[in-house]
Length: 375
Image (cartoon, rainbow, N blue to C red; front, side):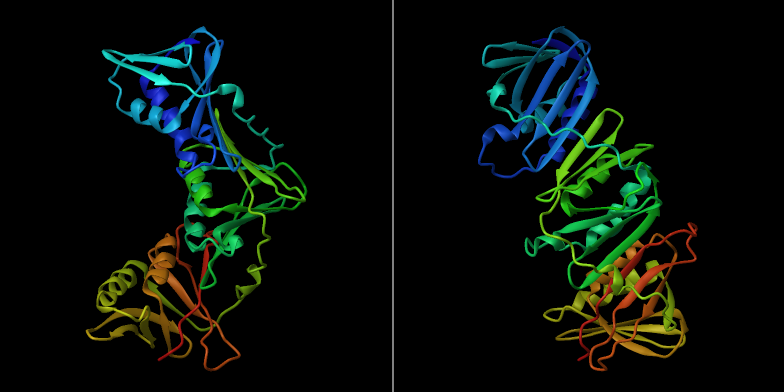
């Protein structure tokens, strides 16, 4: 195999593929490799570890076609630091010679014949803009659990209908939900539970693409989801466990709520929480004109933020970082914090955070946060 390729094009392609592949200890070292296939005037770069796969095709000047498998991390590190000159590859037995300007590398290759076959992409289920996809995932995935168990909480549940596609995540203490329109290619309802970390990386990768196709394949044992934009594609195995039906936790109408400046509440929460030691929550007292934040431990702090209140006064204990996450995900100058009812008078109902007066009137983002018990 022998070919020449633009340095920046190569670096970007290798970075894309290597970034999708999780950097973890692998039982099979071969799965840490990147497969390079040269054919006609194109290169295909692929990675696959049985959980996720990524493939990108780029233009190159191919003199001899062929296939090689080399370390994805090593090639990514090298490609990112090459001088501004054409890059030449030439295979030589069990090694590949890489030259770029005065830089020369001799890299060992892996047994390409032992590399697994990449999964085929399922039929497209629908399309969505890269910007909407990226923004939605960033708003919702933050609520997914960082713990390994239960597995279903580490994922983002994607639910698609012929008109809309929804993204939902929870870690027991909070639930994030956003529903947006998409161009469906099927009349069937579909669902997929995708690992949150993988989905976040995919969403960042396709953020600038005008259109991203999504393909969901449901199997009795374990399904797959695929994303494709231009010459790039990514697949991910779905989480085996079934997601719990948490959508029903969101109330349809809440009459008791406060409207507050998003950034002011974020800033005040960060300042007051500086004195927190053992207790993970701050006290928020909402009345007709303000919300008072209080922390009382070995050190004490308090601060107030102006609000517009609709309904009765209320006091809740909220985890600062969880609240900040929800506020930050609301892309609006003001947020609406609604207080839901709970049949147990000793346990406050969840607070529902959503955008208020957003420029995008169709913003459907909702963030449900369970308060701590009052002390």
